Image (cartoon, rainbow, N blue to C red):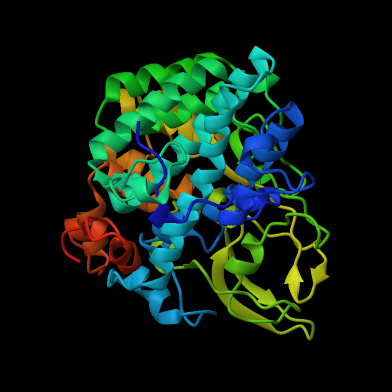
Length: 471
């Protein structure tokens, strides 16, 4: 089994209040526990697990790797003037990424640092003298998180170093990129184990992984591997479990007070209103690059006409998903289209930031229903999603003729149902539609550009690490 590498700089457990360095391992005060004496009690592992879950705030940050790949490299959004290193950010939008791009390196670091927080728990808990049920659940949760991250990473970079436990810096130099098929095999292995160890949603702690979350992710992984039979099996089990259901109102999904509903399969938890809480910043980052409301929007993921026009007449999801402008304190209205789903107009301003209270849903039941149609070809699942918003069902009178096949209908439905939720680019890649769709929209994309470059710094640190073709 492969392990974590020194060149990936994974030797600090960043979120648990520990420091790293030779002296840390050689001589640690009693009041400053190290890896050898910390991982003993359930309280220790609970604290470490919280740190592992906190990495979701980095990976799914609105300016994090899944956002940049899932939306900015697709055809739903763009950026104009934006804070930070604009040239590096525009490279994602324009498919002009270079191995020296500082954000690509940051994303690589973010993922592998996050994996360390997960892997250290898995490496320590097996030998810990703890309740067997507790150990199994903790292992299941960490295996789910590791699978989720590797699933995003293999789509973003392709072949990857597979790291599943800590090793020395010297050993790390022999851990090279494994073929993507081996990365997927590791993900499947982890999720197969996780689903057995995890509780059903009704018994899971709010915000923690459940059996349904593991199986939903596993179904999506199988689809990415071209294995529709196994995908259908996993997804159908979740469907038949009756643990989840669509909310009657699509708009209610985005009510800031409406968290962890029956539609949510896996959801990242935020607590707004205070600078000391992990408040949500999707509203601020997706707001136009303006300080008209007392906070400075970052201008990320600004909505383009192409997705606006994708919605059918009468589709209430457009109103729920896209804001059309903002009014300043003087009553002046500025027209602008930007994501609306994470708006929190009740959030307090703290140091010119807005401490919003929105959660972020990574997996939800509507996604699962459409994945079931993708796996089985049965449109009845997708039609449940359309029925909620009172649109003509596929196969019935009034359905748009331009979506003449189940595949095209599903591509359309996923785009408007899951708009701005970081799915679009990954969906197009999974269905082998990225190049034809995006080139038709003027994107300078080729098959080789559907993975990001391996950062220069990574290859400088270990010249055995290969570069992706085309960079």
